Image (cartoon, rainbow, N blue to C red; front, side):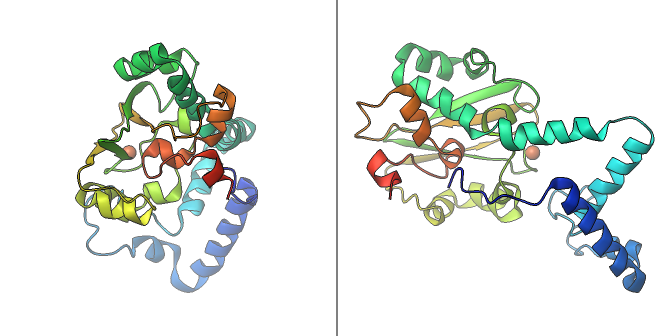
Length: 246
Ligand code: FE
């Protein structure tokens, strides 16, 4: 799964087209009416539950105002997005996992104080200031969610995947984690305890997945190659090299 994301349209192009499309629709329905037509069940004053259809339009409007007021430089924004989408990402987390698999002392430090141990790699910062690392074993399977919105450890995993931010995942991960895991292809025996960790604005979690059998001869770098984003969220296992090559 990792590395298979298709080359997307540029962020700016996407926003521009979304704005043009919305402007065309506004002529018929009225932009305000469209924005107000959220489902009736969505009655609290912040909408974590529903991603608005016109989110790209809203982002563009915000960006335009901030640029117009000279509060931001669009080039800086592009640099931030590029950093989290392309340069930072799950490869950082994979390095942490591979180190923990090969260095028992590092693993112990990581589980005792995730923030400090991740800081040894320099992978702290915005959306990852306070890190807790939870270890998957033969007896315990950890799963990470943000039930409120989309809190996620950016410096170690990059930006959260769309499904992580979706209402069904956020609700079901706590209600029926085993069923959710099964849908992701992780079928846990009944005697494996499932622990679900709800991220907050302060604390972000990283799962230390189980090291697969058959990887004894691999180097730290080779091990890091096996580690997927999903395995560090807890919705996948790390496959042994032969399985992952298929
Ligand atoms: Fe959140």
